[in-house]
Length: 267
Image (cartoon, helix red, strand yellow):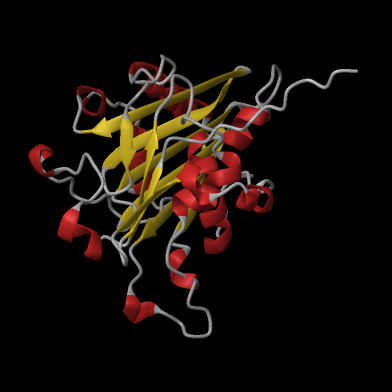
């Protein structure tokens, strides 16, 4: 019997830049041997473990866990990630509908640059976990949130081909609504970003007693906002940065096994 030709895996179009060495490496050049080690590293939702988060970050951005479970009859789930320079400020929101009440549960996290003055030497990774808040949305609040997503074009096709550098500012959203998967991206500056409506309910939640209590950062002027990875002398102070590319319905490439390569940072 003739064996079918072996399919060669494809690699995501993303780059990793090591600021300490000024070195750029594409994911394709990192070698196939490591793929097996990371094959089980798909995201399974939010985590407060910084090491696990590094292993699964791009998978988490892509909503691989939500997509895999998105079938008719499943509970609606939404994920929103606000990136304002990954080295400085990231916010995540995981929202799970409650079919019993018609409302939803929100888990919000804020990840900011490590404050060296707060490091506990017995647990140096603790500060990387960031503030966490959980809140219950009423049916009216949840319906308003979904409406704001609709008004923001969340359920329309994503801007395929857009590249998002980790030192830039953007929203990435994905989820499962009524058994259908959706994914979208909103880079700053852009008309898409300016027309966002879904951030209103989230900021209202963050400003309430149920929120994280951490304010949103001030956005850079449009002309000053990074749109590409650092180059030249900027690399030395940039740390480790990465870039992801948006496809029509998700990030380009098999993100789950390769998250650590795209999110590898300093321990």
